[in-house]
Structures are given as structure tokens and as C-alpha cells.
Length: 182
Image (cartoon, rainbow, N blue to C red):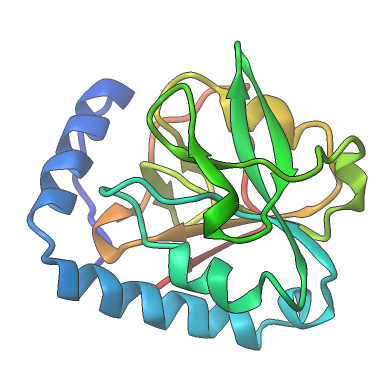
């Protein structure tokens, strides 16, 4: 469901989306995630990829864990780690090699990806997306900074409640190449 009316400032929109996502049951979240990842698996960018980045989802984000587990032995998957004000990506080598990072997020301990241009695509989390493939994150700019450094396809994933006709953006926000939603 695409929403026509939304708060005009980013902080209010973040609060609204947090509220909307909190109303989703675990079953609803997983059903929407299954639909999104099924679309991704059928996409030519995914089928042709060897190296891609994803993220280990927080409880309020689209669950990525099953997808990562399913594909990490066939493809090189890199997950982000926050270091100061930037993200670095490390190779995912299985859950048993994960550890809790700075924000309580599970992080991989694998090799660091030093050349972001080795990535075929990046699955990017977001708070809200619009029909023009704009993305609004949590407000720290971690992904916007890193996405400027790669030519990889930028893929947003979202629950239905995160999609709006338009969202507030600024000149530092990086547009997605495509947004998958259920």
C-alpha cells in the first residue's frame, strides 16, 4: 500500500514508519520478506552476481537472515560493520563467526572488502522509500557515504508500510537503482 499523505520532515516520517512497522506481526514480516527475496532471487542482477553486500537485520527491519544463510555458500556476501562514522564490509562466513558490534548488531569477522567496486549490488536498508526509488535512512548517513564509492547496483528492500508516493530527500541522499517490496 503506497501512502499519499506523510509528514513533511524526516524525523516525523521516521516516527510514523516506526509506528507502522510495530503493527506488523512476525508472520506478516516474514511473509513480506519471503515475497521480496523471491523477487530478488529471480532478478538478473542477483543471478549473475558473485559478490554482494547485504545487512544483518535489526528486529524492526525486513528479516534478511534466512536469505543470507541460504546463499552465503554460493556467493560472497559482505555485511557492514560500523567503525566510527563509516561502514566497512566484512565477508559473512556463517552465523557461528558473528559477534555483537557497536550498536548491538551481529557483525561478521571475515575478511574486509577493500574494493567496493568488486560488489555487483548492495541490498540497502531504509526507513522509507518512494516511487522514484529515493531512500530515507535512519539519519546518520552511513549508507549514503559508502554508496558514493561504488558502481554496484543499489537495491532497497521494504515492507509495504515503508513505501510512499514521495519522501523528503536532500542532495546527500543516494537514490536506489530499484526498490523491491512485497
